[in-house]
Structure formats: C-alpha cells, structure tokens
Image (cartoon, rainbow, N blue to C red; front, side, top):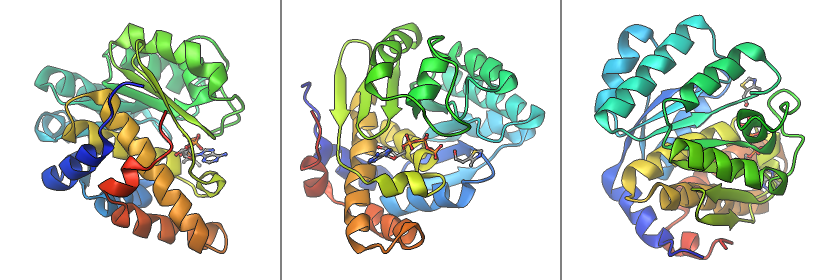
Length: 262
Ligand SMILES: Nc1ncnc2c1ncn2[C@@H]1O[C@H](COP(=O)(O)OP(=O)(O)OP(=O)(O)O)[C@@H](O)[C@H]1O
Ligand SMILES: Cc1ncsc1CCO
C-alpha cells in the first residue's frame, strides 16, 4: 500500500478549514453543508451561472454534483469547472445517476473532458461514465465496487486525476495506485446524501492535502469511521443521520489512522 498519512490529513483539514464551493443537488444541500462544517471545513452553495466562475477561482475546492441538474445549473457547472481548472483549484465531479439519463450523461462526459481532480461515484455511475455500463437504478448502484475497478483505473488514466468508487468497500485509484477502504455502515445507504456529502468531504480533503489520492482516501476513511460510531448509537436511519454528523466532528487523526485502509 502507498504511504497514506491519515493523521496528517486530519490535522491539515482542521488547520486549513478549506472553503468548499458546492454546486450540488437540491436534495442534499443541508446535509452536505453540515457534513463539511462538522468535519472542519467551510461550505458555500453558489450555483448561479452569474457567480459560479468567479467563486470557483477563489474557493479552496469545488464540488460539481449533477444530482438534480438543469440547464442553468449545468451552465454554472461548466463555468465553475473551467474556472477551477484555470485557477489550479481542485475540483470533484459526482456523476449522480449518470448512465440512465442522457442529458446528465452527456454533461458529465463533457465535464470529464475538463479533467476533474477527482471523480467520485458509486460503481454503476463510474462504469457508465467510463463507457463500460448503463448506470444503476436511479441514484443507487446495481454493481459492485470490484466490477468497476478496471473502469475506474482507466478513467483515472484518462483524466490524469483520481477516481473513487463507493460501496460496501470503497476503492480509490489514480490508475497506478489503488487503495481500498472498508468498514462504515449500511445505514449510510438509508440516509439521503451520504454519498453526496462524501463528495464534498473529498473536495475539502483534497484542498487540504498535497496528494489527491491521499485526500480522497482520508475523506472515505473519515466517513466510514464516523458511520461506525454513529451506527453504535443510532436506533435507525432517523437517529443515524445526526449521530453521523456528531461523529464527523469527533473523529480525530488517531481514529482515522486506525481505519480499515489497505
Ligand atoms: N453496504 C455498505 N456497507 C457499509 N458502507 C456502505 C455500504 N454501501 C455504501 N456504503 C458507504 O456509503 C457511502 C455512500 O456510498 P454509496 O455508494 O451509497 O454512494 P451514492 O450511491 O453515490 O450515494 P447517494 O447518491 O445516496 O449520495 C460511502 O461512504 C460508502 O462507503
Ligand atoms: C434522491 C436524489 N435524487 C436526485 S439527487 C438525490 C440525492 C442522493 O443522490
């Protein structure tokens, strides 16, 4: 396994409080902002085409999530991605439900051409984006992480960045190095926006760390360790969500370093 110092990544996130510019879907705005705040980052939801390019140039990182995209937000996403690329701002593409719907699939393909620092999605989304699958069931995956491993590595080689596949075990690759993160809780899949908030945390960590592979792994480990803590306290999905936010705050470098990362 490549050297991944998760203790240092956690400390860097807390020290830098990255400002994460989010262009994300209407379902998950609040849980995304709260997850960033809980972990120690600062969210700003700016998705007007009149503002998105300017803000992407000054933010620490940008998240582009196509979950409820329409023509105006698509234009904002193009402007934000171009501006982030020009400014050297790291940016994350979350291709929610890509594969099943033509409009967002074409948009996500266009955005991949702008070379996102990280593409983060479930297995069905990554397979579809890589041209190797037809998508999942709406926003949910119908494929396993391992089935998407080859497509993820090829996509990463194409973008020159990192690709992360979420599932029971998460996989993070830059085409050369591949790391798996286990643990977590299936209750994450019963809480809307856990994956979308994970994308925002990837953006925060990538802004705080030198190596996007390390930042991406740190975000996945952080979500997994917090979910394990929350699952021990929760009575079901309703009590899991606030317990997970509490745990995102409480997880320290020591806990991250003990995560199931191989
Ligand atoms: N069976 C599982 N057991 C443990 N953790 C899981 C399981 N399935 C998914 N996860 C975790 O849930 C989080 C979200 O992953 P998921 O694959 O559900 O994302 P997603 O489909 O993009 O989510 P969404 O679109 O609902 O935001 C990740 O941190 C992942 O590790
Ligand atoms: C439920 C849902 N529909 C579009 S985006 C979204 C949030 C989880 O991906």
